Length: 551
Image (cartoon, rainbow, N blue to C red; front, side, top):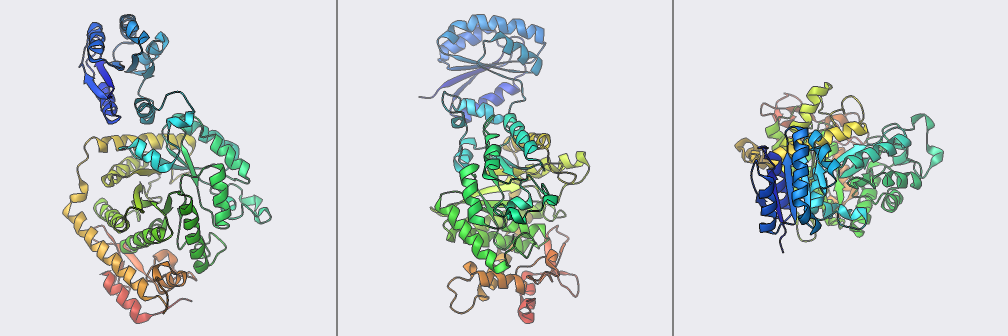
């Protein structure tokens, strides 16, 4: 049976925006809603609650605190019989009035606008009933996505050079109830030498993140999330001992999902001890290990190409390759990472087209046993140093991302160009991102239908499939599926089918491509002789003629 909630602005207060916002959330949570309007007398609210059989009554008052205190006292006295019969009462208003409302001890919940939307949604969806605190907030990724819809989960990286400081920061973030997923940023020794203390270098402790050195450290970090909205936790997959680390992550932090590369975290990018070809096999085995346990998997391959100024077609092709390999490894819930603003000079139209094409490439593989979940983020290298400009960039980027209707928004703090995010930075960034999300969900125009966006989207899909076909042609005789063959994929990098400017002088890659932003604002390959934009068919034809390998 559908429950009924009544909402009204009480007494002489005519401000109803907050009441209407509350009732919209209640409707999304499955309630029957009744709006009594502005300036509603106390007696009218009590009578309506009786008449409608309300189980919940929400009232608001946003005027003078002293007047509000008297009015709320009158309301509490008039509605006390209903309260004793099990009707619950909520109040929402400005912080000074909310403080007076709390002091009355009558209202089941009091909101002053500082609470996260999750807290209110959790209440409306019945997640504050008796029982374990974790039961209020789903503790598995897909369940939490479905619970929070239509709002995306918010994820943010966090890790300080001190373990104690990081634990304290995670506690603050969880208590703030603004973040759904703490992505634990660990230092390089934790990623590469966790099981090899003899290799660790004390001089670089905390470089790049929190220095986790034992399973107990991970347990303490996870325990810090057991408050507030009980956020999920995840961390880097590491650059060595991949499956041994995965076992630790599952046992200690109940990892929400891993982010696994295909061609990175090895000698090619200086982040691990493996050769390019050998690391590919390790990464595919790791995907399969997580898949066997029903844990979602993100493949962050496009992320790495984009950060190295690869042209758009390579990023889109890598999105297809990532999803194809994940599906082949048995992954059922695939998280497609879509990093905007990479390179930073892309304009919004072409950026959106690129992300739509990447999403198309993953979703064409979708089926009953392979589900694609959309995760967007702001470009890691796109933030200006000026704090005011950076805050504006964060909000604008998240608003654009909402055109893809993401299931997860990976928030990147406005502080990124200056320093690694503190707990306060994370909280502030999430509040800003949430506001942009709220605005978008309140009626964002469909930017995906721009003709220029659609034309570039089609162009990129076509060019990406040309790259995929070129990789398949590199397969040696007898290779059943070149897209799953480590030797073929390594050859695609050496030959330059997959290439990026930042790979120049790299022992494992061709590193010869030149890219730039054309007059449309798209990142394209440039002809090495003339500097003019080059189609993917032209670039691949030149590679076929050269057939050169760096090694």
